[in-house]
Structures are given as structure tokens and as C-alpha cells.
Image 1 (tube, helix red, strand yellow):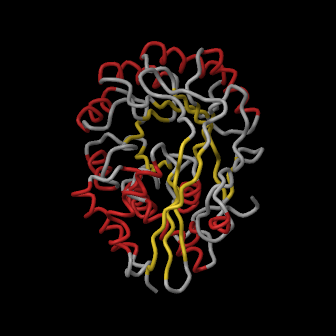
Image 2 (image 1 turned 135 degrees about the horizontal axis):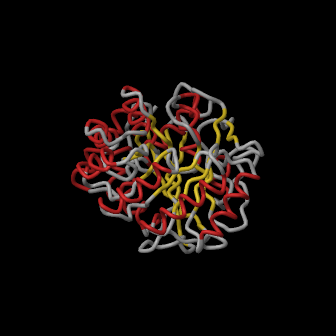
Length: 365
């Protein structure tokens, strides 16, 4: 079997309704725009797809397909995923590919493999579980009272834990984290994500408040450029650190965080920021060798499969962005996410792809 065509299908990606925001200094939800689907096909009719829905995705993917991907892929065996994953990293040395594009080819090829085998990709990967608890991962709300109200709704809807994305003010965020713990009691798992808003002194100040409030993990308080700073943070606070979400290099960079003693809870893994399924699995296996967690970041469908395929992840991350909470469609009333059943990975049913891509949409949509 050989790859014969590499196509880019532009799709409309609507704006979030209602719009939401992140911490001070960051933008909010993206406006409506053009996303894209990468479609890889073969001489035997087997095909696989990968969704790229970020702002600017259509223009970016069109350019990469024309300049780089098509020439590299046509004529290759689609089952040589290891070789092609390494080739993408070779290309990155000169191209400096945007981090979310590093895994698109890999995701499409894993989708193709599942479709050829008639199995969901999480089973092709080996499979570890068929369900996983979900936590509510908030956007940033205006007041402590709004956060507490959203937390109440999330727990009533079955979510098994809550992660805060707050304002990016160390003192104010610390007070919110303590208030949430007092509000929900000692038994609800709580996490905090700093969205890289702090320097080391403020990260230590906030981390000590999280330690006192018994938070499960402390995530990305600083930009992930200085592993030394993260090592110093780990030495200064008791709350476990979850690190290496956005740092380039997949398992290669995650290894240095672990070696430095900075990954005291674990490392982040994801198909979006770790170089696709292959990079995400490498990261998870690396973390498992050190007996730490590899928590899956993001709630798109490839990461849904990833949650079912690796042993050392705890939760599925479900984004909650509105003050009136609506449970994500993949989360049931008990707060559980169940393993996908259709072949391959699938495109989410929430977008309009046109007839040529409809057969790739998740079953039941």
C-alpha cells in the first residue's frame, strides 16, 4: 500500500457561544474562522484524516501540504508510522513547524490504521481501559462567586474534579483556590493551571497556598523554558507539579523535566502538542518508567482515544467555558467518558465538513 494523495479540506469553525476568556494578558476564545482537515489516501482506497481547527489553520495547512507534506508523503507506506514520524521531526529542523502541526500526519495515519483494521485507534494502540472519569477544566470567570457557582453546577452534573484557570494574579488566585477548597470540602479533587502567568517568586507564593489547600496538582505556572526554575519550584512547594505541556520536543524535552526532579506529579501528554499519537505514547511510556503520571491535555477526539490507550493517566479534561454549565457530549451523568467504538479516530460531529468527509465523522452523529 502506498500513499497517493494528500488533501486539505477547508471547513468553517464557528466562534464559541458564548465567548469566553483566559487570564489577564491572554486572548479569549477565537472568532469564527477557517479550519482544515488533512486527508491522506492510498492506492488501495484506505484513507485517514486529522482535524486542525486553530485560528489560521486553513492557510497554514494549505501551505505546508503544498511545500512540504505532499512531496514527503506520496509514495510512502502509510503503515511506516515510525519512519514518517521521524521524518516530520527532520523536516522541523529547517521548517520550524508550528507545534500543533507536528502531529497532524501521525494522527491521520493512526486514523487510517484503525479504519483498515476495523477497530477504534485506542484498541489498535493496545487498549488499557474503556472508561475514565472527567474533570471540569474552567475558563476564567469574573469573580470568585462565579467560579463557585460554576463548580457547584459541574459537581451536580457528575464531573469528578475541577481545575481552575484563574486571573493570573498570585494573591487573588491563591485566595480563589482556598475559597474553592472551603466551598467543596476535602474530598473533591482540585487542580490549578497558571497558564504560564508567573515568575518563580509568585509561582512559589501561589504553590504554597495550593499545598495548604491540598490540590491534586499544580500546572504550568511559568513558561516552560527554564527547567531550572521548575526544579526550584518543586523544591519549594509540596503541591505536586504537572509539567511540560507546551514545551517542544515531545518525550525528549519531558525527559529533562523528569531528570531535574520537576515532574513531581507527572508530565502532560497530548496528540496536539506532543507530535501526534506517536509522540504522546512515547511521553506516556517515559513517564511510566519513572512511575509518574502522563495526564492527557485537551478534550478533542484524538486525546479521547489516548485516554483509553495509556495506563498512567487519571482523568479526561473537559472544558467548561460558560457560566451556565452544559456537560460535554462525551461525558455521562456519572462523570465518565466511555471509549469510542467506531473505526479509526473520527472527526467531531460539531462541525460541518461537506459530503466528501461525512464518512469520517464520529458514529451516532
